[in-house]
Image (cartoon, rainbow, N blue to C red; front, side, top):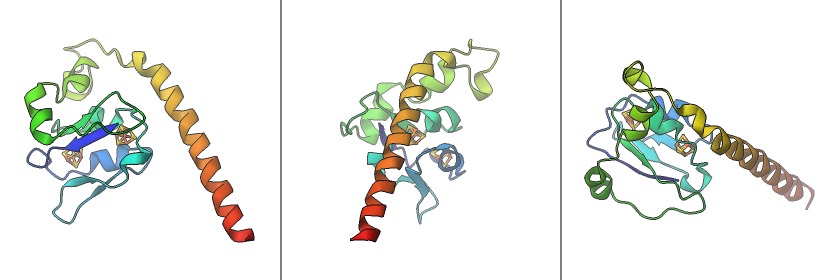
Length: 130
Ligand code: SF4
Ligand code: SF4
């Protein structure tokens, strides 16, 4: 799940907002990305892949946030590691693109998104008929 946006690293490009399939992120009033709907995160890591500033930290726990702070994320040395090890962006040609390994996670995220959409639709239909 997305844990934190490192504000001092974020340059406000908005790429993560466009990349996120679940509308978890939005641009805040200060021109920095903010986590707006953490519970909707699918742990797909697309935001980490696309962030050119290595300003986002996603933890593998999918059910709930574990409360990683910006300081902890910075101290971990893991910011940008997934992007780098996936041979993404500026790392293409330097690191082998291993992103295919995420196939199972993306498939699970896709199924979760379908289930969530169906549940939301059912709730909204219930609300309109009551
Ligand atoms: S992609 Fe990275 S730098 Fe750009 S808005 Fe999102 S967090 Fe900030
Ligand atoms: S991990 Fe995926 S779903 Fe979660 S915030 Fe990043 S792009 Fe959005």
